[in-house]
Structures are given as structure tokens and as C-alpha cells.
Amino acid sequence: MFRKIVFFISVSIFLGLYSYARDIDVYFTPSYKAEGAIEDLIDNANKTIDIAMYTFTSRYLAQHLIDAENRGVKIRVLLDRKSNDPKENKYTKYLYLKKNGINIRFAAAHTYKRWKRSGIMHNKFAIFDNKIVETGSLNWTASAFVVNDENVLVIRRQDIANVYEGKFEALWEKAKEK
Image 1: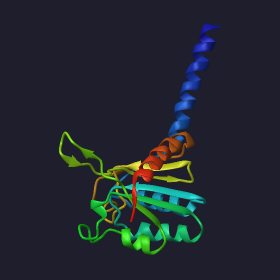
Image 2 (image 1 turned 135 degrees about the vertical axis):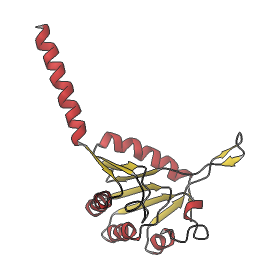
Image 3 (image 1 turned 180 degrees about the vertical axis):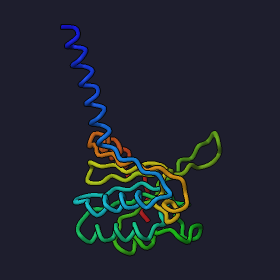
């Protein structure tokens, strides 16, 4: 009886881990595979896309977001203020997205008295239809896919998406509209 229980637990653990592995795709750059995966996520979203990104300069991904917005997907983009200021970053797609109807806010800076400076919004994640998360070290920039060594995880688990969505909502509420 003990052996049957140990066998059952071992098989359950193995199948559980295998199930998680099927729910996560991993990409490394430089490679267009990561960009293609993000493009597919945008193009296949039906209801919502929420993005928290430090900097956003990819016109290619911006155009896919605009296309999604035009087909009725509700899109919210949260950016770091300084890294997307057109005076500081001439390649930012902030104005392009805004001009095309994308709802954008800038993260509220946190002031840390101990260091006498403000922090940055350094997140890099997107939530698709509240069930898929794209995250990792990659900003949605033109150079991230062809020059940088970055990593991208695509997690297809609603429980994980819910955690990210909770963080996004908290950041969104504190953010300033621009």
C-alpha cells in the first residue's frame, strides 16, 4: 500500500511539473522568435491587453497594438515617464500610440527619502485577456530583438495572470494620465 501511495504521489508531481512546463514558453534574444511570439499574443487577444513597460520604441509592436485597438481590444499602456519623454527619448512610441487612441499613463514616481531620489517604473510585462502573461528582461524596443541579450517568458496560466493584473491595476490607479 505504501508503495502505491508513493508511486501515485510521484506520478502526480511529475505530471504537475510537466503541465506547468507546457504552460510556459521561453525565448532569448537576439532573435525574431520572441518578437513573433509577442506579435501573436497581440494579434490573438480578444478583449484586453494591459502593458507595463519601462520603455517602448518598437514601431512594429506599436502598430500591432493599434490594429488590436481598432478591432475592439481594450488596451492600456503604463510607461515610465522619463524613459518615454520625447525630449529624452526621440524613439519613444508614446505619442504615436496616444495619437492612435491607445490609453496611456505614466507611472507615478516613488520618492525614496533615504536615497533622496525618485525611483523608476522598471516593469516589463503584458497581460493578454487576463489569462496570458509575457514578461522577462525585454523592453518593447526596436533593438531588443536584434542587438540585446534578453529573455522573454510567456506564461499561459490564469492564476499567474491574476497576480500580474492585480499589480497592474495598483500601478494604473496611481499613474497619471498624459
